Amino acid sequence: MTNLIVNLTANSFIDDIKEEVIGWRRYLHKYPELSFHEEKTAQFIYETLQTFEGLELSRPTKTSVMARLIGDKPGKVMAIRADIDALPIQEENTFDFVSETPGVMHACGHDGHTAMLLGTAKFLAGMKDKINGEVRFLFQHAEELFPGGAEEMVQAGVMDDVDLVIGAHLWSPLEVGKVGVVYGEMMAAPDYFSITINGKGGHAAIPHQTVDSIAVAAQVVTNLQHIVSRNTDPLDKLVVSITQFVAGNSFNVIPGSVLIRGTVRSFDAQLREIVPTLMERVVKGITEAHGANYQFDYQYCYRPVINDKEVTEVIEETVREVFGEEAIDFMNPNMAAEDFSAFQQKAPGCFFYVGAGNKEKGIIYPHHHPRFTIDEESLFIGFQMFVQSTFKFLAKFNENEK
Image 1 (cartoon, rainbow, N blue to C red):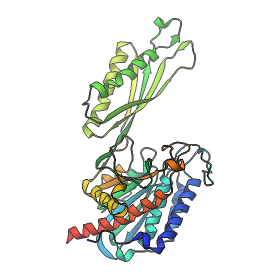
Image 2 (image 1 turned 90 degrees about the horizontal axis):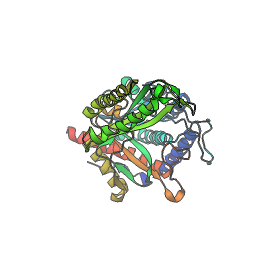
Image 3 (image 1 turned 135 degrees about the vertical axis):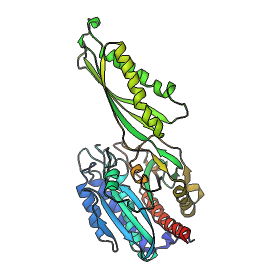
């Protein structure tokens, strides 16, 4: 099997694509759009893809795009995904392509993901005669907002007959030049909950005539932490975080109700199922003990991202062969979330990180920060990972078929 079918560094076509990828990223950064509102972004992607020969284009949903490259020789079907949506954040950067949309910016790298995949589509379209099988380029809307765009695209059929799927995330905590590889559990399921504690409001000077919703809610917050520390196995990966506590509007009034919101992060399907029951048991017991009542709402969101071993092995091999042993960073799972998991329900897949931080250049801000940005050298690394792994995957599949 030929591991690397093309020497990208010796290809004269690459310099032009590299400049285009940077240009596409900067254009998208300048004109960001929020989840489920990516009309102009999707149109830009579609029109750009139209300039490449040999692609079959479609719009699976209103704000997503799929391009199919059917090779000259039969083989397996591979999908590559990039997310395209931005975040409701006011940008504080000062470079000349900052967001021109008030209150909206690409603060997570999706502009770079899109640009990398456009470059990959252009390059592979020019090598159609070398493609054994089919490559689908999935430009997905609404990764940032549940219920997410991945599930919608899956329902629209983009994963029908797909044999494997890959995706990448530009990652600012990882230095540029590194590629983060994770086997198995990678990113958690991010479920949401909302609890309303209803007491009896009244004057702060006569608390005995009230049912103090704040005092009750404070006990709820404290005891919810016991779910992780005392009700589940210490070896389980589980996080319960309270992120909102909303109550009252006056210094001398005990409010009648408190709103508590938060998130639960987990990997294990069985654990994920029992957590809401454990939470409601805590809430019910505390409110009954103090004469209050409650409403409890729990929302299951994205599934966890769990990388397939065989697919991940090929990603690891690609990093070694293209960038060298020193480029690999075997990373631990984290409790962030990604709806790439929807694609993994239909085919084995691997999601990996591409280092995008650079301390020397001051590129140090975390994702979802108003000053987030990337080292644009990471775009070419991600592009190479997509291109080279595509040839490796299709060659591996064809070899297995012999």
